[in-house]
Image (cartoon, rainbow, N blue to C red; front, side):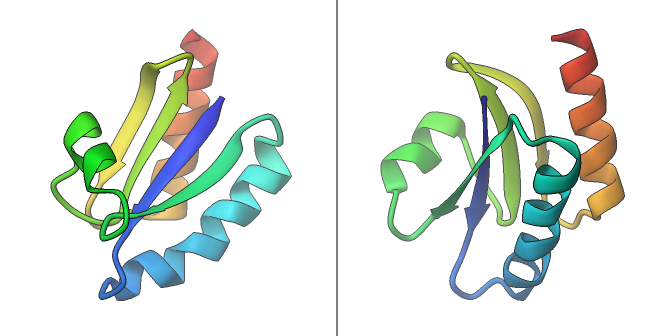
Length: 89
């Protein structure tokens, strides 16, 4: 299972939120692999996953999307979404 974290070089929120998301995964979701995806470097993934803004987070398991959040977000929103997605998995 992996968490795709879509970022942009010009996105201050992306850079500020990244260490908090990494810490959340390490502390509460150690089985979820963190992968940062700079949108400027991976345009094919942007199209594949229909990413329209940064930051965006997708939780993926075996090519199935379990959770998505995009735009302004907080760690608690991310945590709540992950808990819900993993509970119904």
